[in-house]
Amino acid sequence: MAQKSIQVRIDGKLKKQAEKLFASLGLDLPTAIRIYFVQAVLTGGIPFALTEQREERYTKKQLAYIAKLANEAREEKNLSPPFTSADELIKALRS
Image (tube, rainbow, N blue to C red; front, side, top):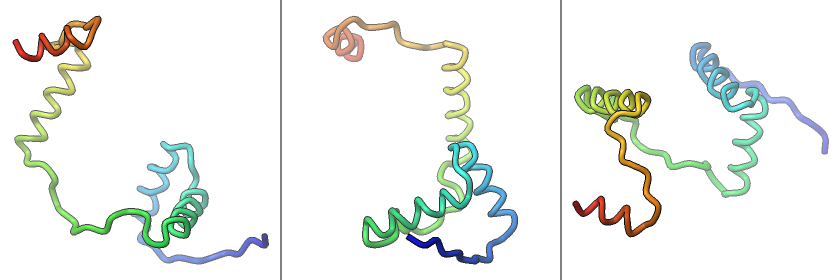
């Protein structure tokens, strides 16, 4: 199939952010755009839900708590012991 080019105007900052994100996923920008086009054709529309944009999904207090839990997990603090069976896990959850 013959390849065709397209041109799109986009904010420079957004382009850099997208390139950084896609690079972290092992993709370049053209490949990511092709994936989007393929998914749009396969699904017969925009391949994700269009929703109202929210400035903050979490409050500062919630973000601080999430960060605290993440740090504890990295430091292996407050973790449950390993379980050898589902029954053992359920027993620990009920206690």
